[in-house]
Amino acid sequence: MPIGPARMPLFDHLGELRRRLTIVVVSVLAATIVMYFAAPTIVDVLTDPIEPFLKGRDFVITTSLGGFAIKFGIALKVAIVMSTPMIIWQILAFFLPALKPNERKWVVPTVLAATGLFFLGMVFCYFIIVPAGFEWLISETESIAAALPELQDYINIEILLMIGFGVAFELPLIVFYLAVFHIVPYASFRAAWRYIYVIMLVVSASITPDASPVTLIFMYAAMLSLYEISLAVTRFVVVAREGKAGLTKSRLTFLSDDDEDEGDA
Image 1 (tube, rainbow, N blue to C red):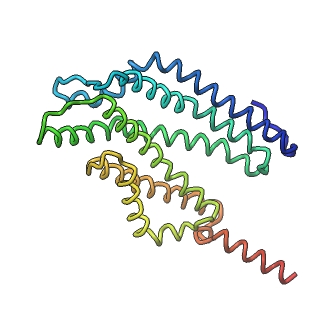
Image 2 (cartoon, rainbow, N blue to C red; image 1 turned 135 degrees about the horizontal axis):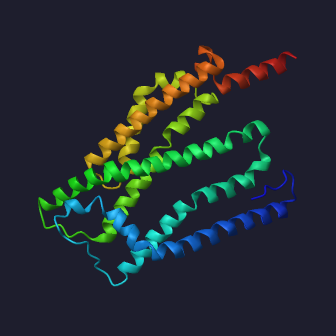
């Protein structure tokens, strides 16, 4: 997809934005139609890690429009996920002309890393979190009543869990860029670890929709691990590029130094 020139009249920019938005909407709608017919297979894949804990019970739909709503909702969500690379590219292609050459080189690695981490989080959730989480939730239900597995409820919780873990797995990328570009020094991340650990616990509790301690513990453990791994990688990169002095550098310090130099001149 071609990238427009850096300088364009306002109405040309608006036309470019409209063109790219049209491409996104048409692509998502086309993918949704295709995924609607594949929805039964997708439902089988999503319910596969849950079925062992249902003890032979079948999923049920309790409303007349439930089947259509579930199939359309799943088709739309899957279509958006499938179209994510194209959506990201359309966004970047609109803003790329405004970036400097040395800034553009970070775009492709960032997109690849963000996409890979998001899908890694979803896969981790599907294979590890969903079975453990639903086993606990179903056992809690069966301790007080007969469990009636309503398909839409189970699917919605599972998709929200997968999205939550996908977003949480973006943490290493955020920490890496904040430290590498000295927006927040590496030393500050390390010094404030107690506060960051508490914040991550609150975030873990906020983005797990089932409110079960099982998913909360797994989410918190995953975020802690990713955070420490990202700090280790960040330290290696910063020291390799700038030496140990780079671990305490701050962009705010650079700005203040520049201002002082201008004043002296």
